[in-house]
Length: 271
Length: 261
Image (cartoon, rainbow over all chains, first blue to last red; front, side, top):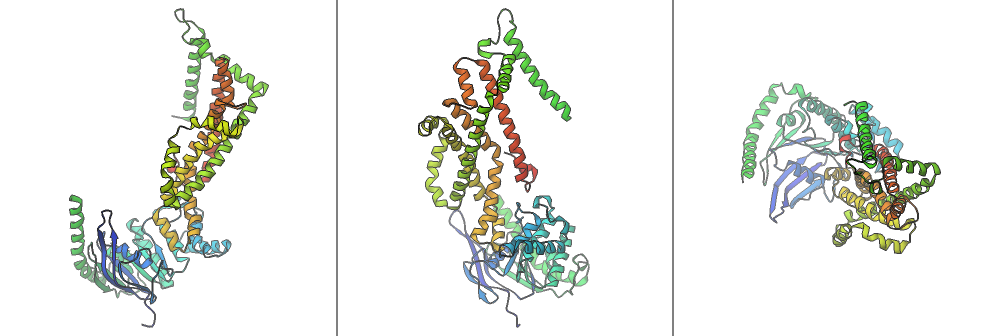
């Protein structure tokens, strides 16, 4: 492949120091690579360290051991090539929608007028052209995610990191957001690392689906190429035979891990 | 309850209370006046006193002095509270060193500082401003400190991932968050600025509402004391209305339910 690999994790182990001094290993020896322009989804049981892996790729967390390479260069500090769409609300509540989107350009030194003009265009392309002057609390959950998407994309990052971005949304809104994401991604193929607990969503969106085992010490235990044709429609692709075959195959592996993860959390709850 | 009914009932409470006061202060019940005029005066005397103050114009000077002292105390105390709160929140080591002293000074009833301020700053407005500042400062300080420390980590991470430098984080994340906490304590801090001014005046001054009340008390003019109290409450209510207006403008970005204190 001529293009350098966008994100490459080599034997990355991530741990946290707990309050009582013990070290909790969240992810163990993860190997993962995302090619330029590739859409990779990470799926795993709740609490398996999917978000941890994403934070490592973002440079927000440093692995205890192992290598993180971004476009073939070792990552030091924050990943400046990446845009990060967080699971929780991350918009600045004191800024209007348009200011939230424009801020990424303004801090780079783009004059305000020009930044606002680009921000308005981005708001329009996520379908919120008429909501520029609303504050985040006046927007619905789905609308806030749209603003978040515009906020990240206006900076034109080469890598897009997404942490269960549509998790809190209702089923219909998730499908609409998924289609919006695919539409924007098709127009300008970035490397995407998309974390979700929803296998169907992962298969519908991604080029590759990576499965993680239950934590602690979660590992990557499977890697499937999703050869479904593009362009895809999230709601229709779920009806197709190939989709079902893939789903059955991957779910066979994922199910055991989900059960393990569930057993562990319920034990921890009992203890 | 409709607005009209509510207003009617609210006015009714005042009317009944004043009427009872007037009756018990003037009409003997079984030979004794329940509210002796010497200690309780009566509404008619109190209100004629208030009207006299306003018609002769003497009250304006005192109101202006108290207002001015409150404003100065509020501005200086808030500015200090914001700066120090910010500094402490960003420099945990400094905060840790000063922590016991901050707690000590805050635990001190501020009234005991009044004599020392009177000695240092004289009987003019400065000693009252100083007293108000010590009250306002801590409210704003604790709020800003908390506000900066409790900035959502997601919002902070988002700022970092969008490429903000520490200075830009300061301007776009910490600062607005700290200010929003300060504004949410606006009613309390403005109220304390007035308390500082009035208590200071009461303990030694040549003008102001507190001075007016203290003077009346000095000559056993109970009507004057009550009149001073009524003017003071009206004054505080007016200031509070202004604060509400300001707050509505400054915190437009907040969901209505959060604006509470």
